Image 1: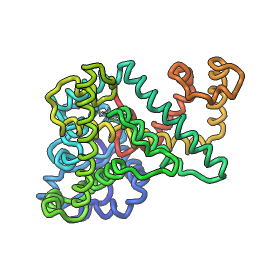
Image 2: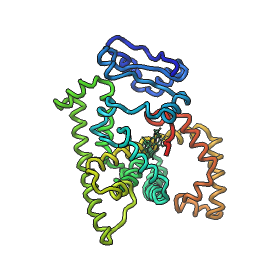
Image 3: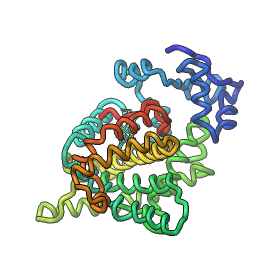
Image 4: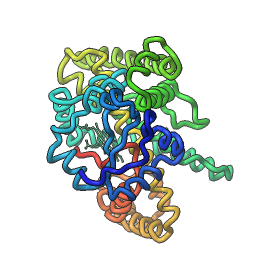
Length: 366
Ligand code: HEM
């Protein structure tokens, strides 16, 4: 890998000062460092020799060749490893984001297979359409009538959270509802993710000690994990009963959790919980951040907005006729979306241009 010079590394505290100084402009700071280092640099959060060896060097890269090397050509050379796994274990267990080898491979294969099935696409379409029609659009219309601004980023986060919960375990928590209610599962999930990431910036033995003594962020983490556990236990127990009833003619479920449960009956509840939490982490912020950036970029480029609208109108005239009131009756179906080549290109350009979450590559490889 080329370009080893990164941000300044201080004795003992490593790159922590730069990290803290740029806490509110993390993406810009990382992008500047990458530019200076022509695409790749190495850094370490702690520069105390024995701890640095344990915590390891962090390589930051946006070089497509390096990404291909890490994610494809020599994928096996880059396991998450014990330090990473220890940090995430309480939240993600041995889920797809926190496992290597056979445990990872099995989940990857199951997920990849499920993502190609028509029923999963249909389930995704059903959850998204229902939320857009009955909650997202009415909230926007209401704001328009009242002449009030909306926090689009928050609405999109709520929308994608509801959708991904529906898709993952078949229950829509309706965080996107009039009045924008607080939801215990969403807030616990946010707090747990934030507290877990906190572990990355301090040496392992310190967060482990804090965990043992129940101090600071670790205390809030354990509280949030308990709440997540209660919520998920309830979901899994209900689903087990429903699956049993289904064998006797009860309702059928097509969410990911049920698919994993039907694959093998002996998965522990904890493993199933982690499978679900990993998927929620994977699909929630990524989609909402991508959409937020997209609407922001479109608002800055009226020419692109116009082209998107022209393409959309053409398709809707073909599929729903000239009466524009029919255009808004139902959200688009897959056959209509498939014809929106310009919109898809604009979305891809958006993914290519702007940072989505904390990940290196900008697409899932399913
Ligand atoms: C704009 C939206 C999204 C972006 C930008 C995105 C990006 C990524 C990236 C960069 C990776 C790591 C690279 C890889 O392993 O291929 C990844 C992995 C993953 N994504 Fe996505 N993702 C998005 C939406 C979703 C959604 C909606 C789901 C699930 C419903 C999902 C599920 C996953 C899973 C399970 C993995 C782990 C794959 C593995 O480790 O093998 N993603 N995603």
